[in-house]
Image (cartoon, rainbow, N blue to C red; front, side, top):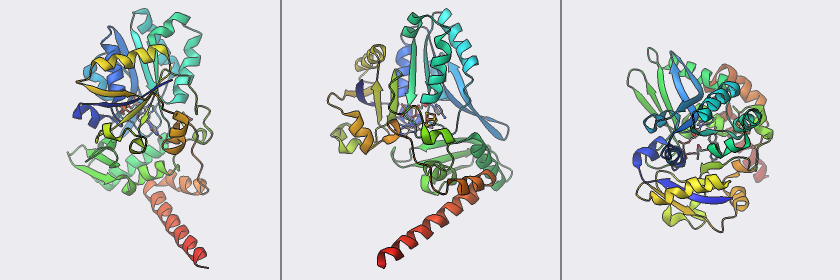
Length: 330
Ligand SMILES: Cc1cc2nc3c(=O)[nH]c(=O)nc-3n(C[C@H](O)[C@H](O)[C@H](O)COP(=O)(O)OP(=O)(O)OC[C@H]3O[C@@H](n4cnc5c(N)ncnc54)[C@H](O)[C@@H]3O)c2cc1C
Ligand code: SF4
């Protein structure tokens, strides 16, 4: 496995990406090789709700639609996607598919029976490091509640990785159809807080079968801990990606970006011990998150109201803090 620190030199790309924009530049590099199609997750408003599903683009001007992490499960119709990919392959397109490891594995197993071994030379599977994804019902509930709270207005767009000053600002930006915009710190945002604290995740995320697996061509993550491992002098204020390139064709594609040094920065991390790194700073690649003890209680409330579940969570937290202090004093 080859490991890289990566970031875009374009402020626009960095602000549209969750981390350092590795996905954008890898997709662009593939599009530049000739005919190519890129598949990724697009969040779209449909009336007062949102759909989050896989879209296909074959032009760099459309890539903004499938950039940035959306913290809700995306619909992944493996039959329909495979059919589109088969069409692409027969039309001599190269294909890149980005998703969570469980989605990509479903795709890999399904399409393996339908393609020739050589076809894999033209397919790039790009996995994100995956903390887990929230169930769609929670996201729908949150949007419903926001629409009710801001009467006569509808949520038009939501950016869970708004980089106000820097990538580790942890802000959420919400646009409304009236043009109004609100920005909240992550810790003040009920949905994002409950997601990070693991109350909204699918059950399968607590015992994920795809940790520390190296099935796919690329793994992309946030380069948390960058300041601690000697790369700090090269870090970027608006986002840093860690990239694992796991196959020869993936290494070739990312190495082609060394020729694009006016557009992006990449550094090959020669002596990088990924296990040690992930254990310390970014465990999502290695192990599943833990189910909170009060998961059932809080997530049951969240089914009815995300705002109420957040209030209850904060109350429990405060209560536990006080209890721990009292016990310590004794
Ligand atoms: C649900 C989720 C949890 C994550 N958890 C972690 C984590 O714990 N630690 C970590 O280091 N990184 C995590 N990531 C990955 C990280 O947020 C970035 O997506 C990754 O570093 C790529 O960023 P980028 O700047 O290269 O490009 P970006 O443009 O930000 O790339 C985002 C990519 O993810 C795809 N995507 C977006 N939303 C979804 C979705 N809901 N389901 C499937 N694919 C999606 C997009 O199509 C795109 O390819 C997570 C991503 C997601 C979607
Ligand atoms: S944590 Fe595992 S099961 Fe959950 S979405 Fe990610 S890859 Fe899928």
